[in-house]
Each structure stands twice: as C-alpha cells, then as structure tokens.
Image (cartoon, rainbow, N blue to C red; front, top):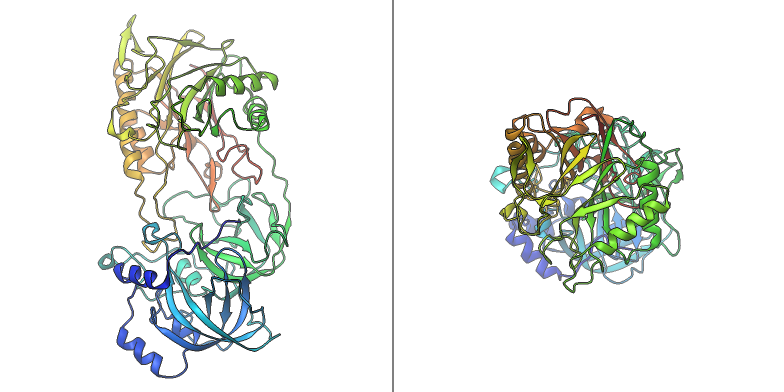
Length: 613
C-alpha cells in the first residue's frame, strides 16, 4: 500500500529544513536545561505546542509502552508513557522512526534513545503540520506483555465544535507556535493526542474505502449530515470536526482492509495510535479494527425528461481513453442510459486522446468517442453524435500525453447541433448576430483560448444547440485543479488555497463571454457546466455568477444534497451547471453514483438539469 509517511531525507536535512522554516521554535537554553535535568518523559518531548521544545536534541532512555508497530511504509513504532502528567496539552505518545522493520512488539516496555525531530509529511511546501518523532533510535526492551495504557476516547463529547485557532500573523499565519487549547479547538485536541493510543466507538462512514486501504468516519453523527449519510462541506467555516481517517496496522496480505461505502457503519471499538499523514491529517491507525456493517446505499437514478423538457448533463469520466478496459466503457455507458436517463446533451470532461497517456503527439479523440458512443448504444441508449475541438498537444494540462478535453454528446433524435465554422485549438469563438439573434462565430469553438487564465488548462468548449425551435448555448468547462492547495489540517489557518487565483480568472473569462451573449439577447438560454473544481460558495462560483449572468443551479437543492465529490470525508461540490436568467424554471439533480462508493467508474457524480426553453 501507499506509504503514509514517505521519508527520504536524513534527520540532519529535516532539522535544517525546520530551521529554515521556523519550526525550531523552542528555546535552545530551555532544551539544554531539560536534557540535563530529570529523565526526559514523552510529554517533555511533545511539549505544549505543535513543535517539540527538544527538536533536534538527543534524548536518552525515554520510557514507554509500545502501543503499535508498523512494518511497512514509514516503519517504526509508537510508545506511550502510562504515567501521564496533568496537562491536557501535552501528548503522552510519540512515534519512533526505525526505517528498518521494528524488532519490538506491542506491550513491550522500552527505553528509547535517539534524536527528536519534526517530520513534515509531504514536505515543507505542502503546508502540513509536522509529526514529532524520535529517529535513529537505540531501543532497549525492559519487559514484555505489559498492559497497554488505556485508550483515550475520541467522540462527539470530546472533540470541540470549533475547528482551529487563527494562525499567528507574525508567523505567516502558522499555528505551530501557539499553545494548544485542546478543549477549545478540534485540531488542537487531535494534536494533543498525537502518537497516543486512542479509540472510537461505532461511527458512520463518510468517506468510502479507497485504493490505498483507508476510509473516513465521523465521530459526530449529527454534524452537517448529508441526505445519504455523508458529511457536507458547506462553507470554509464548516470543516466538520468529527471527521477522522482510519487505516490499519496489519499488512494487507495478512488482513484485508474492509470495503465500506458512505453511510455504512464501522461498528464496535476501533483502537490504535493516532498518526498524522499527508493524505488527510490525523489518522487512527487501527491495531484493533471495528466491523463494517453495510448500509442500504444504492446508486441514484434520475427521472427521465418529459417530451418538452431538454435534459442537459455534465460528467467527468476520469481520463477515458481506448486503452481502458471495455468494462469501464460499459459501466460508464450503462450509467448514461440507466442513471442519467439518456440526457439530450451530455458534456464530458477528461476525454483523452486516441492512445491515452502515450506521449507521441496524438490529439484526436475520435477512437475514444466512437468506443464510448458505441457502448452507450449497446446499453440501450441513443445513437449520440459528438462535437469537440482537439487541443494543442501538451497545452491543456491533465495526465501527460493524455490531452484531455471537453466533448459534447447529443441525441440527434431530440436536439440538433448548429455547426458554424468549427474552430480550432487557438481560434476564439465570438458572439455575433444572425437573423437578429445572438449566435457564435464558431460552433463548436473555444472561449478566449489565448487568455493566460487557460495556460496549461482546459479551454472552455462552446456550442449552439436547437431544441424544439429554440437555441440553447452550452459552454462546457474543466477549470484548473485544486493541486497545490493546503489541506484543512495545514499548520496555516486558514489554509492557503493557491489554486483559487487561476480559477477566479477562468470564471471571470467565462462570465464575460456569457455577458456578451446576454448583451445581444437578454433572453438567451445559456448553460455553463462542467467540472468547475470549486465549491458553490467559492469566489470562483461568485465570479461565474457575477452581475446576475448565471445562477448556480445546485443551490436550488437542499444543503444536505449539495455535493458531487467526496474528499477526505467531506461531501462537496466540484461539478456544476449554471443557468442564465431566461431559464427560470428547471429541475436539478446531482446524481450520486460514484463519489460515495468504494467501487467507482469515476470519482465524480454527474449533474443533470431539465428545463423547457
């Protein structure tokens, strides 16, 4: 499985990095004094902030009971002092990084000598908090078979409602130097338990088992509950404090990790050390894992559109290309027909070129689309036609060599495509008038492709459709990813969301284009849709909607149903359909068929909007 803490740098390099980034916040004099005084205890190492006051120092004969042993990935073991101090801010547990497979066993009483360090999973640039550890250890086993320190319960009563303190402006927004307040802030509460033996009781699964043998639960069953069992991320201030990642200590070959979907329950007691990793932050690494009790969650099916309704959908099909197994094409096709009720227009994101990630200059996606539309027909769906604009090679980001792009599928028995001087990768479509009505100069065409906002990113695809004599403009998007953003458990609070700047520019470009259409015809039917890669409450969405040009249709749903993606146990919006003012009445459905399930055909849920032009 994936290492939760890939360590490649020597301790000296880590200390040097820590010095460069202000991690060595403790007083050197105080640390020297501590070393020369009474025997060092684990709570002395952990201290009352996120950074050890003994960071970079040698410690000798630190005593503790082994509470967990990890033989893969970041190999080492956790020890805990059974004789706790009276300060809730100081953890009584610590990780001992051995690099080699540890030779100790759970229940051993040990003395550990080594170097105290602060390891940052993912590196300094990730913004992640650090893990206090002892490295280059010399370990002496004093006795074996000892009782473990009683596990500290993590539950709705112990985890505070407030997520994190505000970062210190003088430290660049970091919370590293702040004294922990575990009774006030959830992140401080978890940090005060770092490395300790903890336990949870029966908890609801809010993030399905992933390919890396991990799942997410909530210890607060009532917190921002989604209609189908998840936990909704509804604002930057509702981070959902009860979320906790679960992994297991046992190697997968020895004990397969349970398969769980959102809404299932992890029953009984799950107990083990509390770790911190780059793929979600605080993680209970289970020595004893509860039992998954399956729920009744099933993939949703949207209702078919009425005869006079136009159904328009968007679906990120996750790097689809002809080298994918036929089973993926068939599963996606079945979803289009059975779960999406064969929409009249379907905007696809992440359609790759004809040989996928092979980086040989190929940009055509004709084979990909032929294979997909054939699969849809075989599943009982319509004989979809497609329109797209091939990108320039290696200019649109995504998987190297894949040349992902947006594509329109449409059912010619229900809707027609108005082809007008089809554009190419570098030619911008514009708004003009034809017979007194707004029209595109290129259909299909790209919106403002030379704009720096689209550098190394997918350019919007615009097209004109006619349904029952009415023109509908559809603009398919795949905005820049959230890559580079800091996680919610960052040591910067609030976390740095650097990727937003590009999406804001992209949203402004699309909003400006929609305004051009509306300037020619204020009653134009315009749909902006796709993988927006941002939340319905974000500045990106606000910029798309600016001036009343568009309305985020997902806001028409109850809050408990607003999500298309599940990330680290948070059900959130990434995929959207936005409507122009003329589209006053519609029905909207976020069709949950992937994001909540361990078995996925894509990691996104498709969106469908039905209206009468």
